[in-house]
Length: 231
Image (cartoon, rainbow, N blue to C red; front, side):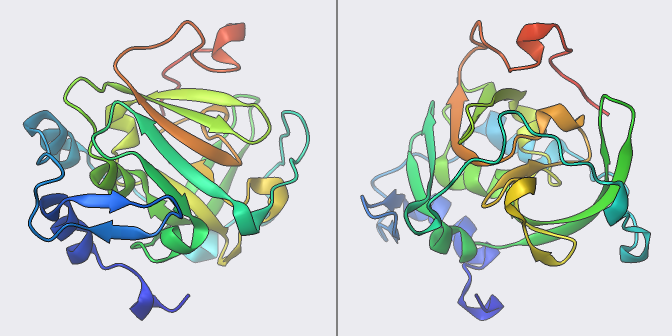
């Protein structure tokens, strides 16, 4: 979709004070008198301002041949026409977004290094929507400290809220300047330079804000891998 038809960052911030709603069809709406949502809490605002970007690479440094496709249970079949990203849990405004809704939001692009715990690394360009922008729309409650990600293939992960709100943590729908391939996690996958590869879930369908970590923290973490997995 053309850039001019996307929601601008100014509109995004205006919605946080105007009261955002999402109807059952996933269409973004807002109440102009601001009676239907709470303002962003101070702790959430401080997290938005506290993260510093990680240095990125030039486009010329991209290493497409080094990116290895790791699969959990194979590439799931996803009906893109009916796909929705659901955001729920400890939030004031649960969301159900179609890909058309997401495409209208502000997008960003970054060239970062993808690092796998297995020992390989690749410089990749990811493009998509910042998780912090989705969080601004969902408005996490002051008690929210963690975020769970559920995927179409059954994979699950959890992150700390500060890492989710990092300006370079995105839900990507583009890779190396092209539409994200299915085997790399289309329509949406996590991408960030601050976490190891196993934290960066593919085929994300649900984002759940949580007050505490559940006994099941992540697929590999539950098998003994480190939970934070920061870089």
